[in-house]
Length: 196
Image (cartoon, rainbow, N blue to C red; front, side):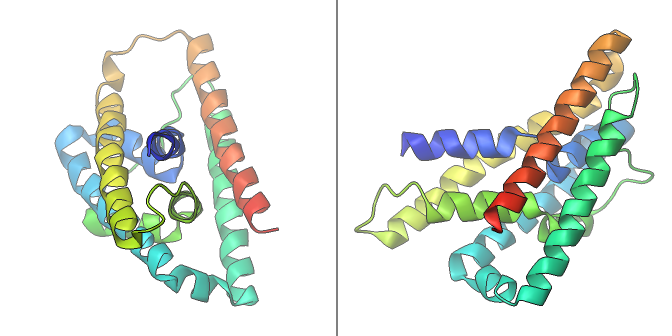
């Protein structure tokens, strides 16, 4: 079970569309307005979990045309985000929002977020710790996933909301941008690798 906990932490903490947009909302609108968006992400990620657990995601993605279109769109979007982040110069590259999105925006982002499907598939298809009791393992995995997911996303929201208090050098800001862009490209590489 400890291996599963570690996997959850490292798969969720890495920057993807959800955490980057969460930090951006925190920076643009503060902690309170960002909570509605995080609630949407929470609902969306649990819907993705249920789709993966039930096999619905596998059925939809089993149609090659749908899978390739969704994968191409997702990879293109993630590469676009990586380029935006890497070329942001000396500004911290959290995804900027023009108005505070509501709960629905968070749900919709998770529905098209390839990282959400990759993470959930990895976590629920691997790391067995109760193979004789599938119900217990599945429910406990959902609980563990959410117990780690919630504080990580709240921390990203808090980091974004606290951004104005940071006084980073331009070099430090660029390095952060490159690290975030590299993380996005790692998500792209994982997505491509998982579809071979």
